[in-house]
Every structure is written in structure tokens, then in C-alpha cells.
Image (cartoon, rainbow, N blue to C red; front, side):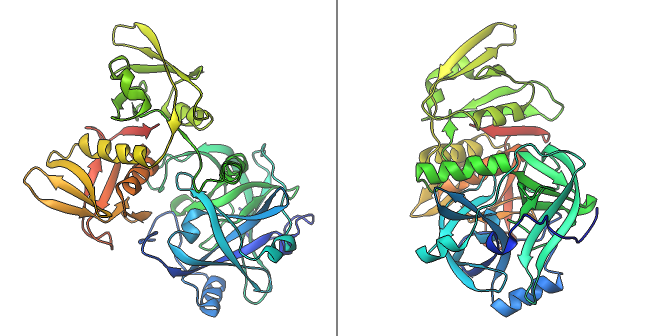
Length: 426
């Protein structure tokens, strides 16, 4: 851990790095920011910017250009729920932004400048997709109100890591780990290597062991190009309709559930209860192999699943995945409620834009928020929202449903009858 320093000289920070202001928070977004992975607003420079701008919250961002168009990349949690998003340069000149799209699963948002004339003011920055362990890294944050860039220097500890710690709000792969001591306001900022290339985007910190995690540049590129080139508000993903499961003791990956109304349902008898041996030709040793493989399988192309039953008999099934759309998120939500080990829950329905949980004793509870206690909490405005949130947190094996907006009252939804099971929906 080094602390503060200077950026490599070939980084034109004034033309590529921005402060992102979050204004007029809407009816949804993160409603609870008390967490072990994020420091509070305890930085004087951050508080000075917030007070001077009158912003609700702020983060950082950087410019990535595709076909001569300047896009601003940041974390979704920086701007989620905002009715007004403004970028600022080093002199705090404002540049209004509009949302192009995003990916809740990996906490990425893609924005562009509302005013066409602002597009040419910026330069994109180069990416590096092969970071080297034990090299120096530069974590960039917001512009300070009185001048200068928030910057911390550290070492790259792991060039690729899986976030599996229960204290972290997400369980994913594709992050680079470093010890640059970042704080609030750095989320969405670029993590540079010695050559001035972006190797990741600051996403979260782990307070207890003082390490930081940045989403890798390869995943950022894939998400941004997917959204921009497909002209969709969300990343286009393949979906089979399967709930994959693995005990945390690294036992076999199993096909635990096949969801109704999905591409896999016609193969339910062949799939259910089987061990997954290979998927799309990739050997499956752990559930993260499924995640990594499925993230690279385009919709519409058949995927072969090689299976093994309890007698050791091997078989295969070819399934053509569909695009993960709202109706499949709804199927995920219904499945998560139906297989929940809390036995008093009967089902879930959406009525006039609200989601209700029905219990066996004929009580009805409105599901208003969902997340993990004292970590990232999302509002629920539809059954599809709930399904999307289930996918984000499923590898934790559980999810807390809030019965009020403040997330004070709620119930836990557990996806299996054991506390140490990892779940993944694809």
C-alpha cells in the first residue's frame, strides 16, 4: 500500500476522467449504504464537493469511445435511482448525462453526453486486458473542489479473483484486487497500470482487510459494447431456465431446478437432479465455471450440457438459450419464492405494479425492497425487478425481502435447505 501519488504522464486526466453527480433521487435505487465494504462520507474533500454542488451523492467515471462517440462509464450504484445525472471536469464545469444502459449483475452503467457538442471535448482511454500481479496501480476518484484529482497508489494483489466473502455485497468473478486505499467517491473511477492503461473500474472496498476490488477491463469492454452495439438498455444474456447449485464444500454442481416457461422446461426430466459434467464443452468443477461459460455464450446458439446421474450414467442435452428478458426474470422470482425453505410462504404475485408474497396462513405481505442486510438494497417495483435482484444475490444462497422502504422489516428467502449452498440462475 503506497497511498497518494501521481498518474503516469501519458494519462490525459483532464480529458478522460470525470466526477459524477447524482441529483434528485427517484423512487428506487440503493436505500441503505451502511456496509462493511464501503467507507462512509468521512473524507473532507468529498464532503466539500457534495456541499458545494448540493448533490445527493457522487462518484467517479471515465470516458470510453466507440466509433467517435464518447461514453461515460461508471458503477450502477453511483447513479441508480437518480432523476438527474451530471458529469464535471476538473474545473467543475457541468456536462449533463443521459443513461444509455447498464448491467445490474456487474454494477456497470453506460452514459452519454446530452449535448452533442460535448462529445468532442473528451478523449477515450486505452485498456489493458492482461494485468500483471505485484505491479503498481493507480486508483482514480473524483476531482477535488479546490483542484487536483483524488488518487491513491497501491499494488495489484491478484489479476483475477472471485468475490466470495460473505461480507461483500456480490459474489462474482472477474475482479482485480489491489491495496490502493480508496474511499467513498472513488466508485466508477478508473484503475490504471504503470503504462497509463485502464485495467479495471473501482467497484468496492473490503474495510476489514483494506483491499479494493475493480471490475476487470475485459468485462467492462464486453458489457459496454454489448449495450451500445445491440442498442439495448441492458446487457444481452443467454438464459436456459436452470437453477444450478453447489454446496460450498466444492461438491459437484447440480441441476437443482428447471424453471417453468423457459427453454429448458421441455428437457426437465432429463435435467433435474443431474450432476453437470460439462457445459458448452467446458469442464465444470465449480459453479463459477458455469458463470464464466454462460457469460460468453450468445443467445440463439445451442448449448450442450453433459450430465451424469447418481449411477454414473452420462448423457447430453442440447438447449437453445433465449435472451434473458422480463418474463424470465419473473420466472426466477417465482422459482426463488416457491423453493424457499421458509415453509410459510405459498407464492408471489404482481398486482398493479406491486409485488405481494402470500403465506400459508392467508396473510399478504408487500415486497418493497430486497438485498442483504446492511449492504446493497434495491427497491422492488415489479416481479421482474425481484427476479433480477435474486440473480444478483443468488450466489449468497439467500436474500432478504424488505416489507418497507427503509428495509427495517422483512423476511429471509433461502434458496436451499442448507446454509452453505451457492445458487446460480441461467
